[in-house]
Image (cartoon, rainbow, N blue to C red; front, side, top):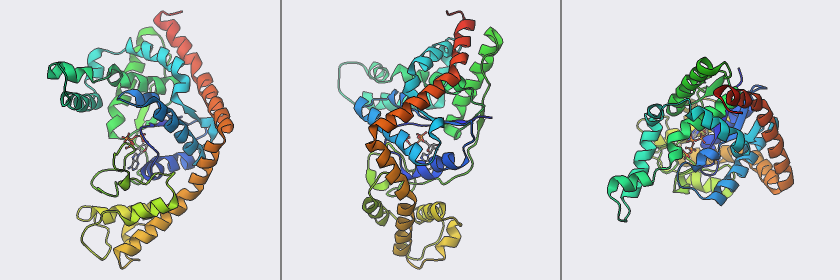
Length: 339
Ligand code: AQP
């Protein structure tokens, strides 16, 4: 079963993305699996076009530098025409209510509405809020379904937050197949293997995220080694002094030990016993993270410098993904009554 996984260029790739996903993609990916930079998904909330473009290139370089076969990587917007056509087919297969009840849409649109309502202007609160919610936030699941169905992916490794979207994809694939004719593979949502869940270094109660405003708590894979060490040295820990792995009561120290375990192997509790002070743990974590990221960082920066090579790899990846999906798109358009 081929798998499809993506990463959204909503910010710079960080240690959590690397330890929790990208490193595994490079190690475990099957010959038929595909990975993509989901830049179209990065447009559903206010964004800066130049920054999005540059982050998409950076992410492509990082995926390849991490060791993922370049033949299996592409940038989503390079397939914008194919995906745009398929989204339309899927929007014509999906009911409004099915999209509107997606939890992510409800949460993100409520958050957007609240931020717009907070601003000034002449509209009443509700109109102002709705004016700030992009239609693409509602139709996001149709794009995600198009990503999956175009490539004929059999399995989609997703966390709980995306499971509902894969369920909707299954519904749309089955509905299309039974109404117009068999075109789409009905995908399964699969749980990714349990991996490191890296927390923010300044607030270990929340996960490390690309879009976090305060970069002090986020180690980016392209950070200079000195910067990495500084961020880890300043990581928030509790008032204790002897390291123990106790995620509920000492989340900051637990996070550091889990990062160390993800980089070096072993269990966080066993590793804790090697150290007699918090400072020693931080030094060991900084060393391990720098060692883990250094080769990746160097390869990614080399690729980013070689614009022509990165462009060549990008075009080849897009071409392969396009070829892989074009017969499904053609069949779907024909069966739904187009062409
Ligand atoms: N902190 C994390 N620890 C472990 N894994 C993580 N991932 C994300 N954060 C952590 C995994 O990285 C992959 C790609 O992430 P994504 O682009 O799909 O978006 P996300 O999960 O929403 O990641 P971010 O970094 O938190 O971005 P923003 O700030 O935009 O929401 C996924 O496999 C994800 O599980």
